[in-house]
Image (cartoon, rainbow, N blue to C red; front, side, top):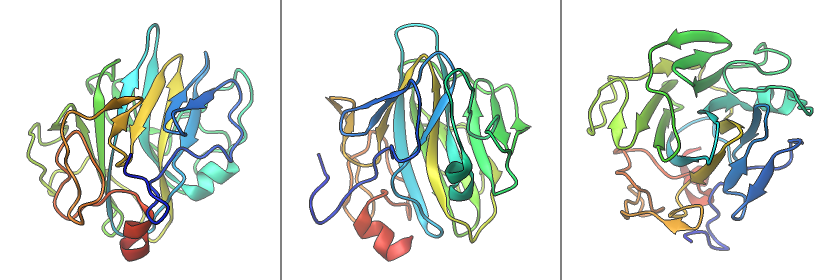
Length: 228
């Protein structure tokens, strides 16, 4: 692991009660129950440019969502057994507090509305990529090394998926129904399996499966203290 006493990488926070879900692998694996539940990263940001990855895993039926959520939304959530909570789509309390964005099934949702459709469904084994420009309010999604809008392995900042309000504090967010997310915020593992490649950010922090876009950084305390 890249995590050290002097440089902590993001984990999935368990501060918000998440009934029927489970967390493992030092808080980097999140398994949702039969109804959608959500989890958020332990490190947030209000500025800077950030990159993270997550691998979708499942042995049966599954519905995966990955995205971004305003901390005001996540702090208002109150999940209960049998209740669906999907980032960007169906949170309790709505999105009056701030923006929420999620790639859910074949749609990209923002604040409960569809902003893009006919997306490739996220399935087990997919490695998802997220690049988030908090300075300019733009988010970019990639899947298995290809950026969605650009349809290319080369990152192009002109091809963002959607926008969000700047000047607010955001966290990476994940929702899962009968499936799991194995998150890599730079530790270099999906679950207990090391990444096949060793791509660090421009500061030399983190180990990722795919190349970190130029100017984007891993969510760790040393980077947050500089950029976030």
